[in-house]
Image 1 (tube, rainbow, N blue to C red):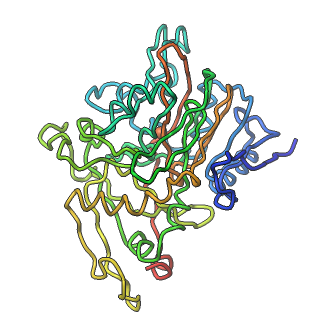
Image 2: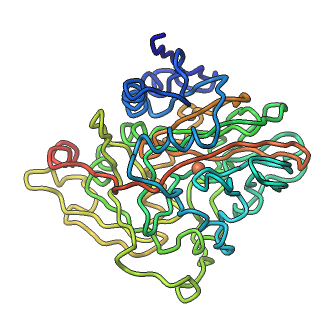
Image 3: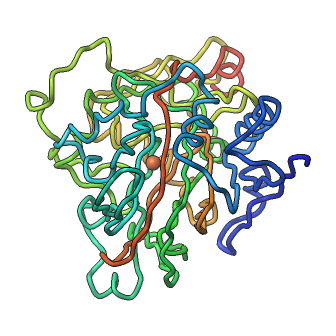
Length: 396
Ligand SMILES: [Fe+2]
């Protein structure tokens, strides 16, 4: 049977003109037992469309690991390092991840208590909630009415020492049924988005770049971001913005001398724009919570200086300025019309190009709503590639 693809079903809130290339449902192939030829086709589709959905899939953790690894055959540890997140009790990610004992690259995530699962006698899972991370929270009354927020827009990546995974695979095992919720931005735009309970929300990093005005395109194509060492420990005491897109600058981050030992050579500096290895498109890929500095190259020779931001280049170390600058560039792309909120069904397998999108957990479950997912991504064998000289010339 030949591989068939069709567009992902979009919610009414989405602007279809912005999703012509984003997302495909794939049929006619079993993602757990792909032949090398079939995998090649899937790989091309993933890089072209950023997200692939397979419905009604049976997939063991071993098969999920093998599928994820096929995108980066020499990678073999989980995106945050095998079992490392669990040991790092101070990390903000610590409560969210439970490792599958016989396939440590695959994590069990979700909500409620799961029994006798893949060698885990009892796993207590907790869906991350904005109430413990954002500076402000939805009131309990509003939460009871189904109002919620994006938890944290991010790339799946350790951002220190390890390279950002190419692909993340998410496999839905138990999906509680419930009413739709309203995700509120609470940033005085009045923006809100109706979402399925417990959706995972995605935005395209390509769209994030494409919709920018030319002065921000020029800034983006010339910029690199530096991430803090151990960023998830650093950010734990801090509070996020109400949109889940970065941290409020209140000086609450863990002080440097309280971070675990670190080495300068393992600190990550990445381009703001990551070049898609198949399409050549530029994707705006910044995990705003972990960034501490911004490096801007000067305009290339011959570029128009009029209206240009930082025409002579800059090294911005003021955390508030770094965050404000990134926020101005990233916020437009999480507008309700640009978000794909996936409506999870049991046995959905969702693959996304982790170097081409940003995503966020959304919603709130009650403790008795049991949700179980297997998640896999692998610290990559290389760092992402930024714009080439031609791209800089075109956009700067
Ligand atoms: Fe994630």
